[in-house]
Amino acid sequence: QKEVEQNSGPLSVPEGAIASLNCTYSDRGSQSFFWYRQYSGKSPELIMSIYSNGDKEDGRFTAQLNKASQYVSLLIRDSQPSDSATYLCAVKISGGYNKLIFGAGTRLAVHP
Amino acid sequence: DGGITQSPKYLFRKEGQNVTLSCEQNLNHDAMYWYRQDPGQGLRLIYYSQIVNDFQKGDIAEGYSVSREKKESFPLTVTSAQKNPTAFYLCASSGTGGAGPRENEQFFGPGTRLTVL
Image (cartoon, rainbow over all chains, first blue to last red; front, side, top):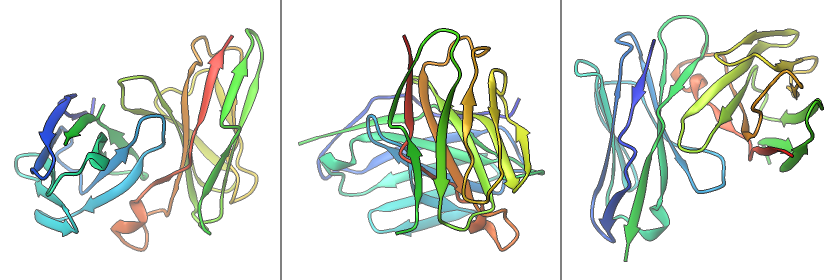
């Protein structure tokens, strides 16, 4: 059973702080990793994709990937109340078609 | 504007009734997917289709059926055999990975919230 694990939270951070969201996965052959943001009652929105070990930065977001440790994280710098949402980690399983396994998500709350 | 549309936004089903959820995309994507989301849980794959006239069962296909007669459209029918259909249903699309890793990126429609009365 291939799995993706996330801490459900809530993760509470003050406005302006760095929020750190973590995800571990079980499929050692996975090569593609995604972070989605989901506001309450809405559909997931893709915010970051990462395919190589190391860091990938896009504005206030940084995705970090460590395939040896089977660990992917998302850092949000200068957190804003508008970042309050559930963040879903998704991993493309190795082999076959484009199947993603989703974690249950981490709820982030940014307070003023 | 390119995107994915789903209708209706809200749907109410009576016991024993079949209902069909619509999904249309104009992103020229080959692959389309249906997911189900229950409160506090991750997305679970119901069905997927990599090409017109072909589709495969996902992890929780029992009680559901699909068709893929056009590249743009991938409707989902929730049959009376699905005993617990109340959930948030999400349709997604992507390329098929042949042109590079970004083709794996899946984009979601706004969803349909189904409630059993």
